[in-house]
Structure formats: structure tokens, C-alpha cells
Amino acid sequence: MGSVKNLLVQKEPVDDSLGIGVFEFTDDYSVFDYGKMPDTIPGKGEALCRQSAYNFKALEKEFGLKTHFRKLVSGNKMEVNLVRVLLPQNNQIYEETRNYLVPLEIIFRNSLPEGSSVFKRIESGQIGREDLGLEHMPKPGEKFEKPFLDVSTKLEPTDRYLSWDEALELSKISEDQLYDLKEHALNINDFITQKAQSLGLEHADGKVEFGVGPKNELILVDVCGTLDENRFLWNGIHVSKQVCRDFYKTTPWYKAIEDAKAGGVEKSAWPAPQPLPQELKDIVANMYKSVCEAWTGEKHWKAPALEEVMNSYKAFLEKN
Image (cartoon, rainbow, N blue to C red; front, side, top):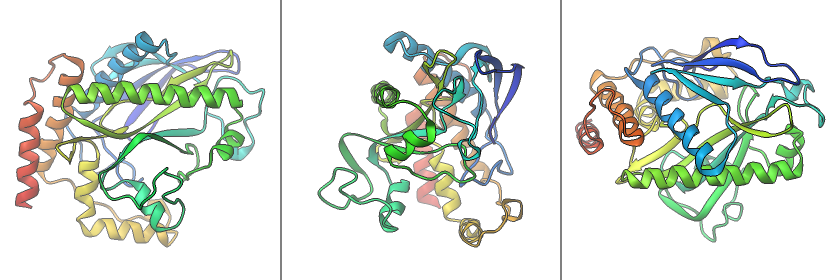
């Protein structure tokens, strides 16, 4: 369950048995942890659902990776296996615990596009160039020779970055499982990167989540390889949810919401944003549909070609 997708639980997971549920992907979108924005992006939910289903099936086939995907129910609904959501901050996870969501987001970074959170962390001293394996301070567009893996919390009110030792302690998985989890993340990253390259896209970064099953096995859960979970670029221009983030950064609302966060204002009292301009909303809708059709090889909307969509976005940026 999240701000952009609903979960219908058909069978509750228990400590020794997976549950069953249906993800319903909506056309809602969310930026800067605000939650559901005031408008919707037509076709976005179906595009995310179909692209993610394609990725789950491909990863199972190529790497033998165990995932929670069961089947596509309809355009914007998929049936999945469910693990329990237990909170480490409430001491609900122990080393012998089974069938639970690993409370971590594993982030893979191939480059540092403009807007990457890494730049904020460098500025605040939370991370240094040495941590990134670099001998110089990075600039927007910096590419890594090898993918860089990062890790953050998943089930806290605000995500925070962790060391791998902290991640191990928080999640209660074993050192061997942590090693396997990293290997899975790198394989997933390679798959997404190669697929993106075949479409003329650069895969900058993305995230994945895992569960521990009833038999202590790692399971890929949630969603992966979509325009919401990953950042792609076309000739240096963002092709992802970052487009919405970039627009809102130009509005007074962005400063207002950052000030509210810094001032400890309750989320319910955060200022409300304005909807996207209609022209940009149409472009973003076509972006989701176009990438999904090219990625899966299935035509559901007969969306414009990606190059045409991106040229429209370029024109919008130049005009505004």
C-alpha cells in the first residue's frame, strides 16, 4: 500500500505462510514525500503495472530470481504473494523471524544525474567522495566505473541512509543474505541498464526491495524497473518521475514544503501544491505509455514514439 497504489489483501500472510494480494496501480503521483498530488497522470498506473510485470517475469527467467509476482490480473492490477510488514523500530524483527519485508531500500547508482540526493548529502557532510570511490568531487552527470550500492530505511516516517553494518543490524538478515541481496540488486541493475540501452535510454539509478520468505529465502517484492522506481535519461534529459520533481522545484510550493519539513510542521499541515500544467501532464502521460510500449513490445495505447515525446518535452522546457 502506498500513495500511488492500493493493495487488496485476499489472504493474510502469517509467520510461516505467504499471503496473497492484488496491487492496483493508480494514476496518482507523489513527489517530495507529500503524498497524493492534486491531479492524476492518465495511463500511468497501467504503464507501471505492465512494465513491472514484464520485469518480474524476465528476472525470474534470466536469473532464477524468486519474486512475489503471481500474475497480471488486468492492465493496472497484478496478483502478488505477500510477506508481513514488521517494524524494526518497535522491536518486531528478530534473527529467527521469517516471512517479513526487509525494512531496507537498496539503491543502485550508475551515475549522478542532476537532482540526485547524493549532492545534498555531500553538501551536508553525510557522505564524501571517498565513500563513492571517487578521487574528485562529483558533478551532475558523473558516471561510475562500477555501479555504487546505497541503502536506506524503508519503514520509518522519513527514510534515512545507513551504513551496511547498520542495515544488517536493523534488518536482522544474515551476512550471507546481505551478500546475496547485493548480488541480486546488481543483477537487477544490469538487466534494467541493458534493457534501457536497447531503447536509447541511460539508466542512472533505481531501487529495489526484498522480503524474507517462510523458508528464509530472499524474495524480490514491490515493483522494479519503472519510471517511478528508476531514473532514466534520453540524451541527458530525464525520462522518469523526476520530470514532475523538476517542475515543482521551480514553484514557490517547493520552498514552502521544504521550510515546513525543516520546521517540524506536521504533514497534515503542509502547504498544498498546484496541479501540473495541462501541457506538461499530457507529455508525462505519453512518456509513461511510450516507455512501457517500447519496453514490453506490446501496444496498448499506440502512444507516440519516445523520441517524439522527448522532443515535445524539450520544447516545453525551452518555452518555459
